[in-house]
Image (cartoon, rainbow, N blue to C red; front, side):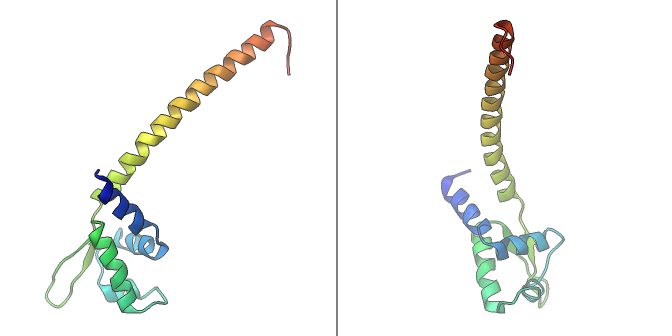
Length: 116
């Protein structure tokens, strides 16, 4: 994942309203009006949030007669998950090494007759 796209995705996900919109779209496509309904903000404000999500590649907009439904695009979320997974693996390996060191210290204490 390139850093510009990663930055745009994290920036889009930083806002709780945008995360709530994505959560709603995970259930299926919706119009701007439908997406605005649960929020105490104007439809133009929702449209601005949608533009941020669209620029980040997290949603797309279709055309269905008079409607322009929005739908979730999961690929950037998968890329974020992969990015996070690399760091999780890194820390998991570090914790395993730490566990080994601590286990070695425990055995050393037992060998020398010191128990805590």
